[in-house]
Length: 256
Image (cartoon, rainbow, N blue to C red; front, side, top):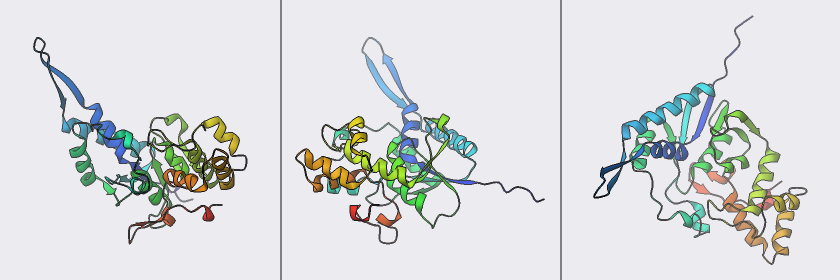
């Protein structure tokens, strides 16, 4: 008998989260003068790089990774264009001291992907379902938005869950669920007054018609629902042309 072939996975990693976490962990407050109350914030870029290297090594070992692809967000995305209020709640919030140089370094250290008008989540969704990237793939992200993509998903903050298999049915339902509940962290509202319990009650069959009916019942329109659905939808290959780098907005007529 021949040796059993060892499966090696391609890891698709949310680098926005990876870099941010490493950068913030390396920030230290320093008091230079107690009497005059002079404080500064200090960060060592070398320390931050070591944090990223450590995390990457851990992920590659834990998930039997043969290679890694880092996904980064563009400065401005298509969601900002269709909804000017998108992530408006984050304006003015500072990034960690070494975030930008650490981000630039990480791009040169590993294979990375960043496409115009896309967030890291969208890049991950496209790579996860792309036939151009052969072999088994695992998406690595703590962002719950990735549960709207059929994929193998690993959440670093929940290692006890292992690699989760998100089915097409689960992904479709989660997308409709988030269309109803919205995401206050990202600044899109969903259907006002609808939280997790009400959303579950609405989605008896997990259809677009149920979502529209709920919006109309609260005095809104299908166009209102469609905007929220497009905000919630993480892109996959049918919605992004890698050659022209054009985005196709989600259309419920294609939803099954």
